[in-house]
Length: 435
Image (cartoon, rainbow, N blue to C red; front, side, top):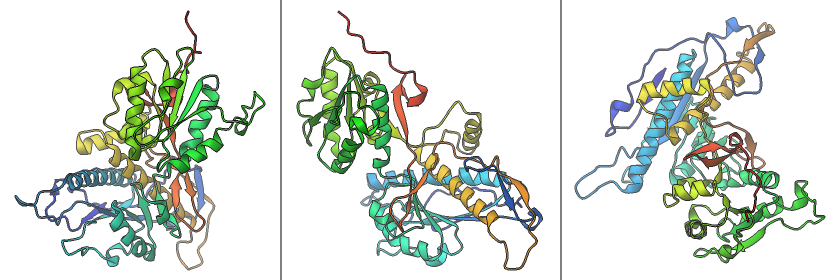
């Protein structure tokens, strides 16, 4: 496995002490694809599989720090994310190498110099199977065309504007539009809370389109719960604003369990802050909350609120700590860094392994040369390639002739002081009104 480190002049080299041995292919293993074996060419003709990765990350290595020129909070945060992502890439590459495959990773600096000039060009991307990043919108928009021209798959591990997916079939975004989790929330509420007092708290802001989609999903007759012979909505609607949650307090009843649904995101923090205050000021009502995935990232949301409301959010990247294969994979990371993998390490690790598996299968199922070759129907084992740890992938092409997004979301509930997969938590008992 060879790692080529480029243009990280002022960045700590302690992160880049990698092995440089090259191994030949001796086994083929996979556990996240839908097949167990492939019929391929005579395996004796397949001597090695070279997987070339380029990562473009914001290390700010060209930034010159002086007494009068200190790094900003954003810069420090982006450096932290870059290191986490690089650690995840190294982790994935180490597991791929251990399985017997050649991996080359080239690291490029995404932030231009003070004159706005990048220290990488299209030539640095030639031969790449996969390019990960950049992470910042300005650099990303400038990199799409050169990455497309060299024929590499372009993997994005940070949230991006959906318009970048249009006309760019080579792009895969592991974080899709939140609209892909609306059906999960609707189905969960209609199956588990159809007898409860359901309140839909709208924000009327940037989430308006999502809120309209949720209205359509939540009609009683859309999912088979039209027991009242009505096609009306099954919830009370409370119209909030940037600074108010309307008459939400008046909708919380002490004689019925209340379930609040809000799609307010980070851009509507005040809605969520006010929601928390209203719920906490009413300690006699039983209240549960279904919220946007951003709720987990907001520091002002306290644990008492999350616990009491059994807060449930859509999530990607939940680690199954009871799975032995997952624990073994995390053990590799612990040996490398003496810690558990943080969010961006998990994302980059899983995204790279998913790309590796798809590239390997494409390699095995395509002709290896232009010469006529004797093909033998050989069952090649695809049962135990190094697999993802937290993120499952269900790729959907959002626009015709456009890029792909990962539409796989899981509901997570705050239970016993941690976020757990909702389906693993026991169902709620029926609401009983005490005299």
